[in-house]
Image 1 (cartoon, rainbow, N blue to C red):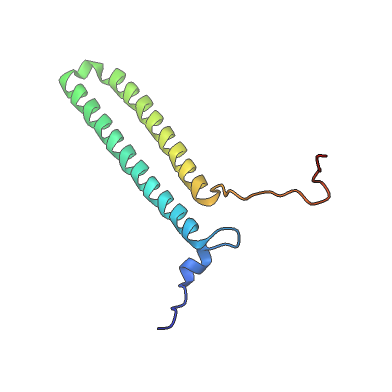
Image 2: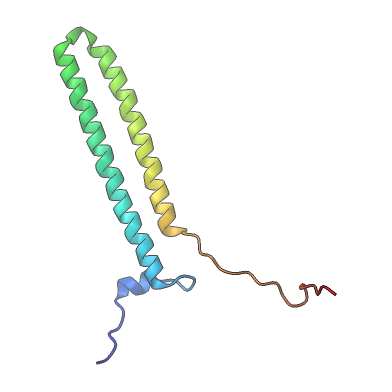
Length: 112
């Protein structure tokens, strides 16, 4: 059995500083995290709009107050969503790597 060559996608994702498996895991984690963030935000804004519409239907004279409150809450949800997306993409592209740092032999001190 001969070893199969890596696909172009895996080769393009891998870098010299990281192993391929950790890079692929980082990108997959960012994709899953982004998906969960977007699904949660869509669900939250959908529930918010549904409740606001229901409240307006029950009490039409409070429509302006309900609308203002809904817009403020939707803006806060979207702000959190953008923040979470930035964090997931930062984790995918700049994941910290633990590398030991050794001092050069000239800088090492000898205790007598």
